[in-house]
Length: 483
Image (cartoon, rainbow, N blue to C red; front, side, top):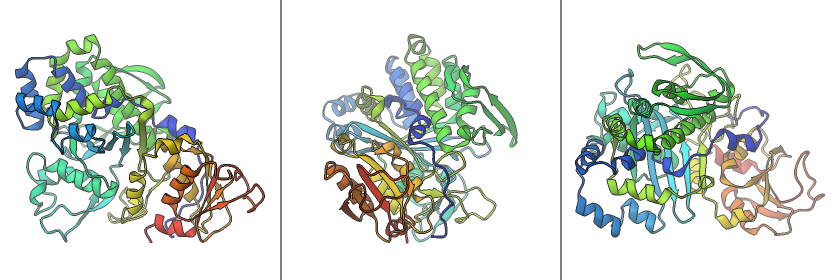
């Protein structure tokens, strides 16, 4: 229990939803799908050149038609058609203009649940420390930040890389392995986008319009000469060129707390992606298709086929924004609640910025990711839920759990402190009115469901006496920490 942090005031759950802005489902595969859709209006030769450059394979016209009509088991089209979950890893890397071109500055795990027509978009911080096992000897591990997984096949940073992580797709497969180890997801495909493609595409579109909720001032933005330069953007709506859009998307050290947080950075990136899609799908955007393809073709790597791309687009184009669940693995900070990570020295030395999973086995993260798509019938109960901290010394566990479940659709009240409890208890003040929600909470947190009244057992200060209250006990705190 040594890694618990002092309690801090928690922002309202509604602020979290605001920080993690909604995006359109067609932006699931970010810049790449936009280019493919536009490419479909061009000649077969041009489209074949594009697909070959980005995937390493020529188009097979007959095979593509057959797959579209009768997709084979294991393909994304088949899985989406038959209600099977599809997982795609999105990576944004620096490219040749950076001193570390293969480090992935942005890592997003996308999970599609076709049975409920929902999408999870999970941001994984680049500073998360993992013990990678990417070498031919399965017993050897290499401790590093997770953003280094993609670069392993392309550099001599470690020796004896396992065969499955070599070749053109080696970086993507290595990143899939490590992000999958943390999240518990098995990825079907990956897409890696160079920052140059991002910048050049915005310029090819003639710029994009983006709105900032606050000023963004970053005195430590990396330049192209292994140094730093200041960047300054005012609050409000403005047109950005490619370099400006990249600066807003990448900034990590803003003076403004709202912009410096992981949530703020994710919001800016999502806003820019939406702006790109809106601009690219206009009449003027289609007229600039050749320039867009030139920007994309050189700087994207993926193991997707054209059929994969079309299947995801066709599935997601009519899904409403409310069907996207935005989550992020974060640590508590001065500007936002954290959840399953913390900041301490977990292998890289005392003077290195690093984030560490509280549960080093990742069991708690796996359970969270697997439980993110709550059954719509359960959500339909609209049960008022509150988390109360019944641990002795894990002072912010209630805030972390509330922050973690904010995006899921549960109706959450602000967390409260409670009397110490060895065991987790779910107090039911509804007389059994919310059976599905109570069952879901019991499955995730354990413990027993206890019928309660407004006076018995005696409520804690600020605790609700209606709906369902989960008193997080010492037993759950131990599972949270993997102990």
